[in-house]
Length: 197
Image (cartoon, rainbow, N blue to C red):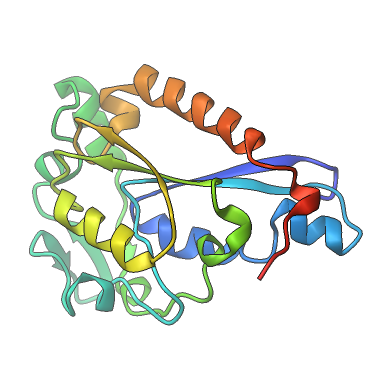
């Protein structure tokens, strides 16, 4: 950013929580107001966790981990039947490779509260988008809808008739929509006229 880059942050799955928290305070408008160049132009969530300030993955999921999560004695978590949970609709060879590349995740990450998320900033009105994966077995459509509604901010929403990994099952479609959405971010009224929270 300090080199003047304008960035769109794209988050998937769990990364919606820490990603939005890390992006807070770095919008193009906020950085310009501080006399800095570069900044975040927009946020794209792909079937991602929309966490409010202080919320954890567990508290945002009804108080317990999903039934497909395996908790290990060493404090790590893995996924039961990962191919069905994460990669339904992905060609078998690619899905098998993706499963082989999965790594365990620290259990503590599920109980660590998120900080203030960038998506709550009014700067992102018209610059905050969400891809709902309508056949997602990891974050079901009902959960995606509930997070969008509970955020109480407007989102540009695109439905993808895919499972949890549209970047593997329909990469061209997702890339085309992403390009389109980024162009829309730039068509929102000038950042010079936007005040931040």
